[in-house]
Amino acid sequence: MNQAQAISLYQPVLKSIAFRIVGSLADAEDIVQDTFLKWLSTDQKKIENTKSYLIQAVTNNSINHLNSLKRKKNELLDTINQSQLMEKYRESDFAKFDFENEIAAALSVMHKKLEPLEKSIYILREFFDLEYDHLQEIFDKKKDNLRQLFSRAKDKLNQENRKIKSIAVKPIPFLESFKSACNKGQIEQFVQHLKKDLV
Image (cartoon, rainbow, N blue to C red; front, side, top):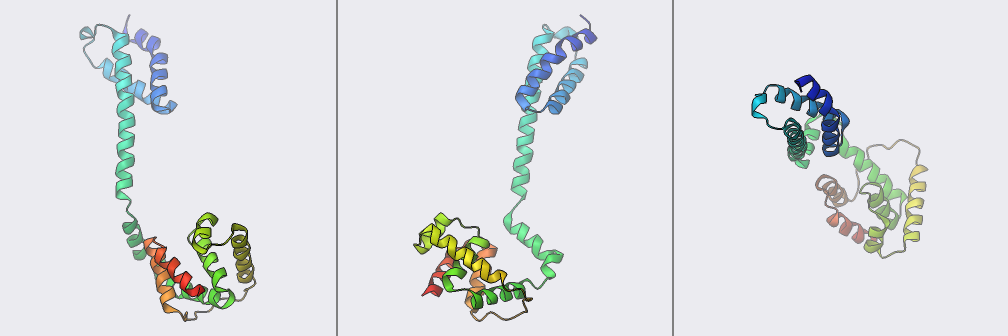
């Protein structure tokens, strides 16, 4: 059997094996093609069983391909660091916007328009995406009650159609606590601040 015949005969089997391992037809075709290219460049006399050799080679190449993908994925994840992302954000053009004043103005409107419990639930749901189960533990209220309070808070804020002007928020510690929760992703201290506000 010559090389062209071997390729024609074994290609479907090898492609099937590679596809089962890597789960991608395009990758499987590339792996089989690379396997044949390496096989063509080897000394054919040293290979006792061509079929076994090609099956083993395509299996190894498929596994190596998966390991390579996994390694690249891990390297990418290692390079993504939350603090680095925050630093890049601060260095970007977005950081030039007066973010603090906008937040301060928004919180000022919330302080004026919402009751303390409404404000607390609205902020934790809207900004920190807390589930009602978690809110139930924090405030010791029924879920239906929490949903009503959240809905009421949204309605009140939606009625505020006029543009928010930059107004300093009276409770400065509240703003600092809110910013800290946003920047560090730890909201426990902010939750405690909200609870104090309820009292």
